Image (cartoon, rainbow, N blue to C red):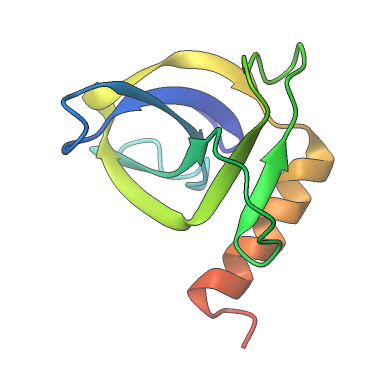
Length: 108
């Protein structure tokens, strides 16, 4: 599992229903018990400061256009993460990096 991979995760409060997410954790932290992700939603919102649109294409394998909810960062146990279903492209990863810096306050 690498930064930028799209996976499904089972988070509590959703009845264990698989939810798509993007891995945001550094690739250098492979031995941790959990992985940091941002959840995705198909409820699109014009919120460029904390939402990143992802397309439905062969790379992402998303069924619907989706937003990365950059303000929804979760640590998910690795055993609650499904297989990799797709990957964000380099441009989306750069935009995600900038939004993360803003949302967590590193850019302040």
